[in-house]
Image 1 (cartoon, one colour):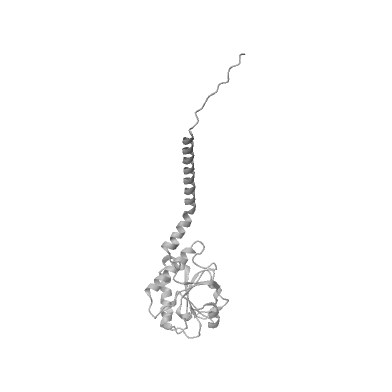
Image 2: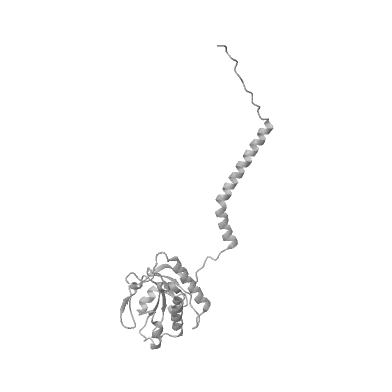
Length: 230
C-alpha cells in the first residue's frame, strides 16, 4: 500500500480586531444579564423602601387600642339579674363586647348599652358570633324600664375590686368610659377610646364597627357562632 500524504485543512483565523470585538460583545451581554438578575433580586427591597419612604402608609389601622399582653377572663363569678350564678370563664367561645357601669345606669351607661346593641345588630349575619355584656360592679337595682332593651344582653353583677384587676381604663378615664373586646379564647384584647358626652358619636361608632368586622374576618377560619357547650 502506498502511503498517502496527510491532508491538512487550513481554517481562516479571525483577525485580532474581530476577536476583540466579539469578546466585548460577550462581556456586555454578560454584564446585562447580571444587572437583570440583580434588578429582580432587588425589586422587593426597592418596593419596600418606596412604600415606606414615599407612600408612608398609616401603621395604626385599628381604632381600638390593642391590649398587650392580653388578659384572660378571671376566675370570677357573676350574678344575673334573676339571681343565677355564672362564672366569667364560661363566657368563652364568643366574641364579647363589654361595658361596665353601676346598676343605676346613668346617661353614659345608657349610651354604651345602646351602642353595644347597635354595633352587634349592624354585623348582620355575623352578629351571632358576638355577645354584648354589661358588667355591674355594685348592688344598685337596675331600673325596670331598661329590662326590655337588655333581652339580648348578658348582664352580670360582679365584684368591682376583682373586676378592676382584670380590666383597666386609659389614663385619666374610668372603666365606665370605655367599651372592651374579649376574644373567643377569653382574652381581653382591645379597649375602645373613651367617648365624650351622652350622645353616640357616629364617627366613633363607625370606627368601632370597622374594628369588630376586621376581627371577625380575621378569625373566620377558626371561630364559629355559639359556644361548644351549647
